[in-house]
Each structure stands twice: as structure tokens, then as C-alpha cells.
Amino acid sequence: MSATSHPQKNRAPRRVLAAAAGLATVGALVAAMPADAHDRGHGHGHHQPSRTVDVQLLSFNDLHGNLEPPAGSAGTVSETQADGTVTSVPAGGVEYLATSLRKARKGHAYSVTAAGGDMVGASPLLSGLFHDEPTIEALNKIDLDVTAVGNHEFDEGATELARLQNGGCHPVEGCYEKGKKFKGADFPYLAANVTSEKTGKPILKPYTVWKKNGVKIGFIGVTLEGTPDIVTANGVKGLKFHDEIETVNKYAKELDRQGVKSIVALIHEGGAPASTSYSYDCDSPGAGDGISGPIVDIAKGISPKVDALVTGHTHQAYVCTVPDPSGKPRMVTSAASFGKLYTDTTLTYDLRTKDIVRTSVKSANHVVSRDQAKATDMTKLIARWNKLAAPIANKPQGWISADINGRGATTPELPLGDLIADAQLEGLAPADKGGAVVAFMNPGGIRADLVYAASGGEGDGVVTYGEAFTVQPFTNMMNVVDLTGAQLVAALQQQVSGSNEASPKILQISEGLTYTLDLTKSGADRVVAGTIRLNGEAIDPAKTYRVAMNEFLAGGGDGFAALGEGTNKLVGPSDLDVFNDYLAAHSTATAPLAPPAADRITVVR
Image (tube, rainbow, N blue to C red; front, side):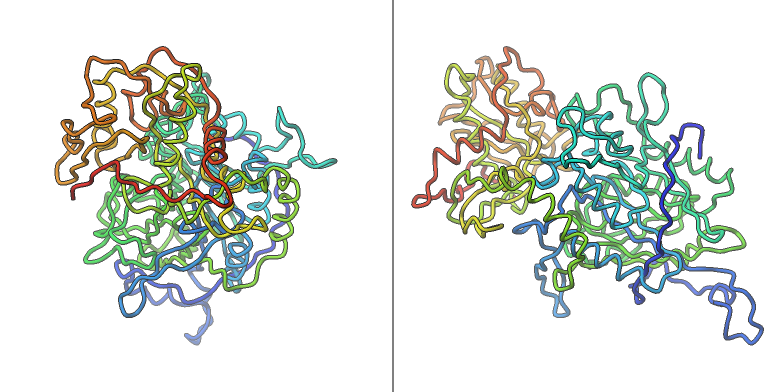
């Protein structure tokens, strides 16, 4: 380990579990191997010892504490059928993820399981209510070997992240179960590019080396450099986030000097494949041609010493090969989110060179199907924590007449986004609550759909506290600030310009605000300024408007610098409390809320 590493507690002896044969081979990487690379110590008559062994790398990313199967569209993956049609397949839930991984490991003498960050944070109530201790416990049982940190690992700050790693009961809420102290993660969290402003050193291990029978594979973990832009200021206080490429290359050199020639980078940053189908071939027509986004440039800049990249953050599914700086294809994978997929990669390890035979790397994503046996230890874990959560989780908050899509919506304006923004406006419009005339909600803060079907015994159409919490798990405090009309227009333009130009972040808006979004244009021009109206009137650049938003947006988060310029701030209740109050005031069992029309933004394509 490097001098900057923290000691990791000794792990209990691991039972090497297993894995399935029959991986799909990515065409760009399949090449004829030398005869000795295929020799497994038999069949040539000389019984020569094999020069290579196959190491199975199982990986997933962006679990976000989804221990139970995600509801609605958040709990499905798109799958292309033989006839070319695309169907939605229910997937996910740690009872099934554990079963899938344990099945996959069978028959593999060398198997390592790694993750690409955001294991916790923005979690449903079952995990979030207990500061994600249930998820860490589940990952320990699943035998996760290593993960990178993601941006959401910093939602509650570096001190809380250290507690998740090292154990100990919550400093405010204490221990949740009598006589039980939280043990922490028995796998290392890697944070190579996150350093302390005081010491200049990584706050957690930058890398770890997995070893078995002389086989050594190094893992380097980084989160996206832009983490401070998408996490509340308190979460990243006292920390510096560094360039992903420079950091990985630095530690790849260090590992190489230590004789570790096989290296995998775990990177919490991702890309966008040209198809949402998990089985899409993003190496068509050529290596990496079917994927775009930040991970492509990162992959092209990372040293050829690194043999594969496990990525995340964008919640997309892909198994691609992107050329490294020397022009050779290298595997880049992501397994969607919420435990709905896992990636199975074969790394052929050359015992003589101690390196991976890149031309023989094979990889494929697999659905975590719900048509398989549940892992009984996960069922028991969920039941145990559900019993503790039940008094809060099952309390009804309101009623809906149909699914109200948030995360699962495919349009810039989300029906659930309208509902949340309306709740924020109503809650903060009274003069003594802030006098808001308009409200904005960041789309990334909407973590799920409101689903009509019952999640438990509450009955169809009932929105429970647990379901509302799953939609808005951050419990951000609401702010109301003064913004000029010019700043308000600038904020709308920042949705599609600056840091958001390549991947727009469309604010969800309260009733009364309307405008046209012209996606045929570029940059800030995509927001047609002359069409912006508030209650039918054009925005006056010189006039002052009282604007409601959560504290993350009010701090300029997600690239909305204009929103961070607000003055005369009034702090209100939490976003979740405002939302639940709105549900209670506007719905009954006999008069449930219908999905909003989502017609405030006129989209031109």
C-alpha cells in the first residue's frame, strides 16, 4: 500500500464462491491467442503448467441503498428481443443480486467483486433512515471486495463516510439495535482523487491489491472531479477533488513500481450509450462508437497500464471497448443502477508477465432477474430493518390515481417534478413562510416514481412516508431568496449551457411559469427568452422575484450559479415535509391526486 493508505482491518477468510460460463465476447477484443495462453495444463500431451489463469471480475454500480426491488419503471431494464423489439424486464433487489452473484461465482477459482461507487446515498427509507448501515451490512454479506467512492458517498460528509468504512454508531442517533454496534464495511472504499485540504493526502485508501495464489490485481478508485458541483457544500467541506485521469495514472505508476502489472480502475463517472437497451452493442460499427459522454475522454487518457475500467454515475448500461492512449481497445463497463444488472468480465492473467492478456478480455452485462430464488440471508436482513422502520415508513401521506413518473419519465418536464415544485410553491408562498412566487426543483433530486401499486399492505394508490422519502431522500431544507428577473432568466439558460450544455439539467417548475425549450438550437439559445412567462406576464429583468428552491440549488448546485446569487434568504421546512403536507392537503381516498399534465415547458425538437 502507498504511504497515504490507511490500514485496513483484517478480513475474515473468504470462501471463494463461484461463476457462470458462457460470457458474451465483445468483438473488438477477441483475437487469436497464442497456444500457450489457451493451454490450461492439459490436452497437449506434455502436461505443461498453464501460463495463464482466468480471473472473473464481477461488478456493479449506483446501488443507492436499494435493498428492496425498486418500484415502477425504476425497477426495470430495457432488453432487445430477437425480433428487434425492446421490452422492459423487472430487475433488482439485493435478495436477487446476492443470488445472481453467488451463482456467477460457481466454478471459478479466481473471482473478485468490485463496485463503481454510489453504493449509498439518495437511498430509500429502509436504508436512508438508518444512515445506510443496512446497505453496508448487505454488501458485506454479498462479499463485495472493493468499491470506489461516488459523489453520493459524500452526502453526509467525510466524517460519516469514514464511519461507514470503519464502523461505530451514529454520533447523533446512536446504535439502532440494542447490543449491536455497527461494524462498518469489511471492504475498502477507495478515494484516490479526494484529498484533505489540511493534509493533502487521500481521505481513504487510493488503491488496494487483491491477491490469490500469487495472482495480484490492483484496484484504483476515483469519483468524478465535479463532485463538489453536485453535492451540498457541507458534504465536501475541507476536501479537494482532483482530475480523474491524472490521479489514476499516478497510482497506476505506483502499483507498477510495486510489481502489480494488472490494474482495474473503478471510476464514478460514466457515459451515455446510443441505446437504453442493456444488451446494446456499443462497439458497432467500431470500438466505442456507440457511447458518448465524459467517460470516453477519461478512458482515452488513462494509462495503458490500466487493463479495464468499471464505471458508473450515469445509471446507464454498457459494455464497450474504448481505445487507450496507445490505440488499443480497452474494456469500459457500467451496470445501470439499483442492482438491476451485474457485469461479468473475464480477465486472463499471464503468470509470467503478471499482466492481463488484453486481447482475451471478455465481458457482458446480465439481468438480476426476479425469476430466481431469493437469498435467505438478504430476506432476513430486509425483514429485520423493515421491522425497525415500519412505524414511520408505513404511515399514509396521501393518495394518487395513477403512477406519477419522476425518475422514469422520458421527457424534460417530469409529471412528478411539477407536483414537487407546486408543493414547494404552495408551502412557501405565504408571506410568513417566504412569499415565494415561483419554485424550482432540480431533476437529479427526484430519485423515483410515485407508484400506484401498493408496495406493502397499504393498498393501491396510497402514498406512504417511505414512498415519499424514496422520491426525495435528501431532506434538503427549503430556501426562499430574492432573484432579479435577469437572474431568473439566466438560471433557466444555465439548464442548457455552461457545465450543463452537453447534458442538460432541466429544472422542474411550479404552476404559472411557462417557456419554450428549442432543442434544435445550441447553448443558452435553447431557452427561448422571449417566451418566458410567469402567470402570463413576461419576466421583467429589473424586477425582484421571491423564488423557492432547496438548499442545494440555492447554493448554486448542478451548475446553476445564478440561483446561488439570491439574497434575503429565508430558511423553511425540509423538502420532504413540504411535499408530504401538499399530499395531505390535496388528496383523499375518494379524491386522489391525478398525474399533472406536464405542459409548462413547450419542447421543440
